[in-house]
Length: 229
Image 1 (cartoon, rainbow, N blue to C red):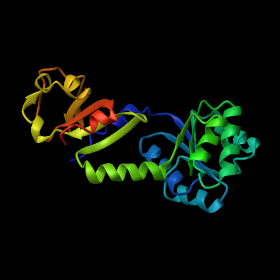
Image 2 (cartoon, rainbow, N blue to C red):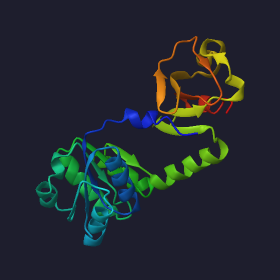
Image 3 (cartoon, helix red, strand yellow):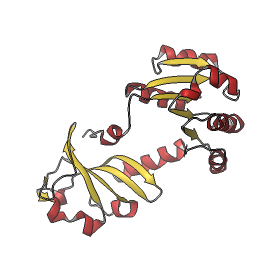
């Protein structure tokens, strides 16, 4: 059962992104953004990695540079980008200096990859707007996939709240949202329901659910866990 891509559709497109660091994580970010139609500038200190993302058509443009040099970031036009992703998680000093350079130069939104909790705290101290832990997040996603296969997609709003796409269960089959009373029974709100690439936002309480449909719900993680999946 394919996801509705509802969460992907929430993310703005036609924006400019710079991805600094073209290891496996950086390449994955480049490829995803590029497929979504965004303008992506990839950079790395290693010429081989820069050449590879161009060959694989994962970016709009790519350039070799040392991101710890503010002048190099300025000359490449990175300081004019909407968002910069610092994907140099395994090199702590370079990661922190690059993040600091971007924020002090006025880049609106900086996302930085962290390899440890201490690394993440340092990145926040120098101004990172968002710190991500790819290995931790991948492990958590795998855990959900193994134990909650009905969860198709997940977006964490904070440590305690999420938006998730879930398959309608047998227990909810052929029942209306009003009959299910998800808000009073589970503390969850239904944002959308649908199938394939079509969905209804803010569905009517009399909307009937059927097995095979997908619900997009928002609420506390502990309440989402109580859903019959």
